[in-house]
Image (cartoon, rainbow, N blue to C red; front, side):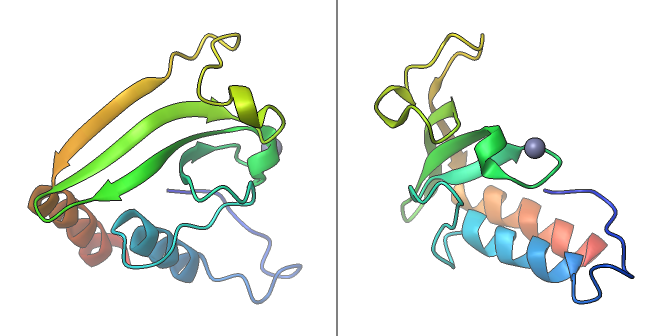
Length: 117
Ligand SMILES: [Zn+2]
């Protein structure tokens, strides 16, 4: 999740809750994944400035009946598309796959929504 303070005078229409809710919908597969890198990969971690071009840690989201899978978790910056999944030059080793129980995964986000939004 993105946590930062936005100047309300300069950005009066900024709605942090709306942005977080939209991101959670992507994590849950209820909404198409959106990224500035335009590659349909779910961004797990990004620069505090909000630009995906600063580089991100992202994955391919796969949701089955019982499981949620984060596949090919890797560093990328949109510049080296063909090498994106093999980059090790940044000292970040790609993770092939993380598998979550779908009910537990959804529960975590539901609890977050109840507690904070
Ligand atoms: Zn940045």
